[in-house]
Amino acid sequence: MKDAKTLWKACVSRALEALAREKGIPAEALSALPPAVEVPPKPELGDLGFPMFPYAKVLRAAPAQIAQAVAAALVGDPEAAGLGTVRTEGPYLNVFLDRPAVVRDVLEALGRDPDGYGRNESLAGRKIMVEFSSPNTNKPLHLGHLRNDALGESVSRILAANGAEVFKIDLINDRGVHICKSMLAYMAYGNGRTPESEGVKSDHFVGDYYVRFNDLKKEDPAAEEKAQALLVKWEAGDPDTLALWKTMNGWAEGGIRQTYERTGISFDKYYHESRIYVTGKDEVLRGLESGVFFKAEDGSVRVDLSDIGLETKVLLRKDGTSIYMTQDIGLAIERHKDWPFDQLIYVVASEQQYHFKVLFHILAKLGYPWAANLYHLSYGLVNLPEGRMKTREGTVVDADTLLDSLRELAVEEIASKGREDAVGDISETAEKIALGAVHFYLLQATPSKDMIFNPKESLSFNGATGPYIQYMGARISSMLRKHDSGEGNARGGTVRPELLAGDAEWALIRRIAEYPEAVAQAARDFDPSAVATCLYDLASAFSRFYHDNPVLTAPDKDTAASRLALAAAARTVLRNGLSLVCIPFLETM
Ligand code: ARG
Image (tube, rainbow, N blue to C red):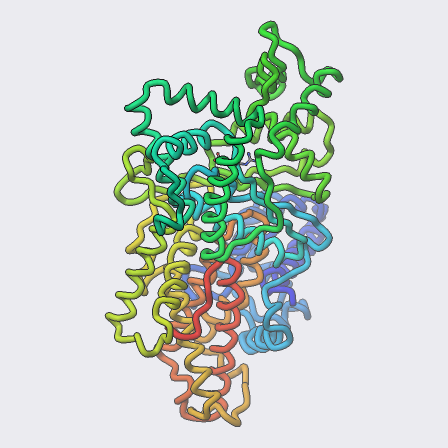
């Protein structure tokens, strides 16, 4: 089903071209000016509005005149006539859609394939790899990871909903001096303790020792050097060092994976830095031979970046050791061999913009054709209302603790509404509400922007929140259950689109009809906020509709059945859409 906007754009475009021909102006003059469609500020003005200002110059007429000429042409266009009516409003051409026809189309499309509603095949045949999360194994995931994870998982699901074949990968940064610091602290204070013996989640257990490295530094001024020395030992394959490293990384990664499971994210493959950090070295040496890189006076291998206006960048230190960039060069090449992607998306914080700009440039210089299709999905910082998160000041919020406290708040909210009996397993429901709260809040923001996460606000059952949308889904579900158990007037009624042509119903239908375009838009921009916003608008349109229009208790059977069909359609879109933004759908709330 083509959406109304697309169909009308084509009609308006045809009318404009006809007008140009009439005036002896070549139609190509319009090719850079495709019709822009807007939503009129007031519903009385119509459903779609086309401003005619852009055509004044080319068509040598006043915008209002053009609007009238186009309107006249459209009256005689049989395709347009089947789609609604047009009216001019000064320089605007406004369209009033044929409401019952749209209602019928939307309900039909939903009925044919409810699960597929909103999906499209525009990316069919494209292999897209998405790297996200990429934690370090010295501490648990924090609030920033929750944003990263939500973005990565949601963008992956959205791309798949647009037909792409998606492969999700995680890079575990399990090597380096930060890992050695938690190991050193454990060697000093651990005394054989384990996460089990202490009853602490295993990644938090490791993170606690990373924090305790600060104590060690106070006691031992050589602690930093010792951490470096431990890294050298690790690289040399010292058995004791490797054994402790394995144990502690197992704890860290195990705990991190539990958090993934808790938040509903998953990966097709894990890459470990410890296994791949050497592979980039060979690539760099080959590049040195072929003249893509050069040897600097100090003996380091560098790349000249003057063509993108940057200073030279070291790729191998003079002692031959590799750096972060070296590793990412090798990693990208290895990944393309593993799974020959058409595109690779890195979901990584905006702090690393320079890194990815340079990385993509180097891979292009090395001659990899796919380098043109690498994309850094850069996202901004997340802070709490109390201010910036800092590890040393203890203001870093780890993901588990945050989710726990959101769940507690949700339990209170359920209790305060007296819904304990209705929701069944209260702690399970509260956990899903907590996830809905955090994921919606993080995803409704534009990825590139820094943001403040306000836990209380995210959980509010009123306003643009995840729980509000979940609540609307649950209300409709409860209505459908009542109908199924024999309550209400809808049984035996006939769904009649003309009974759904009122303004409140129409507003809701419009949202449902817009949803597929939101899914397409989100994929084009790698930005789930288009879907999040659409779902909120849909939920509030449902709320307004339901406020004035009883469904099961509508006076006659056909009205009840028609409204119920509309409510069920809204529910299907909420269910499909919530899964794209990683929010659990709730049957009761
Ligand atoms: N773990 C890294 C960090 O904490 C991010 C890794 C990003 N991915 C990559 N391929 N470089 O900064």
